[in-house]
Image (tube, rainbow, N blue to C red; front, side):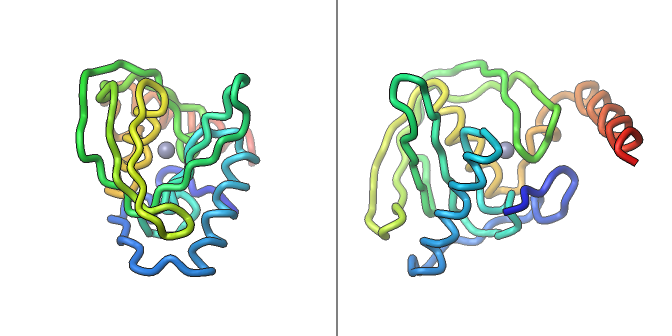
Amino acid sequence: MHILTYPDPVLYRQASPVDRIGPAERKLCDQMLETLYQARGVGLAAPQVGVSVRIAVIDLNTPEIGRDPLVLINPVITRREGEILWDEGCLSCPGFRTEMKRSGEVWVRARNQEGREIEISGRNLLAVVIQHELDHFEGKLLVDQAGRLRKSLYLRKLKKMQREKS
Ligand SMILES: [Zn+2]
């Protein structure tokens, strides 16, 4: 699947909850995971591939554990603890990074690809990725959450990248 990038309007929409988890939804999850691996990312939200629904796929793919896909459908954070600063990037904002303040640990209730209700918790990178993907459901993009200066530097960089492409 093609990953939409800033400033595509789909990225700014509120994503709808998924009310039925059937073959089409399962296929979407599989395609999103494939896209995530191809892009070498750690998380991808459905709005990033142009589907404005509350599905996120995550895989930290650490050397110790290897591939360990996590599918979150209609995820809701039920509890947060602590605070953490993390240098984040986003597949929809290529070439952009910024430090974000996030909760250090989060508890999440969601459904998985089979439609079963699951409860998970994550700390550090996993907590950051979960919060980042949930922002996508609200139409919140990393570039807009960074300071004004960082954003204007990025816009300049984007223009330069586009000039070099054409
Ligand atoms: Zn992102």
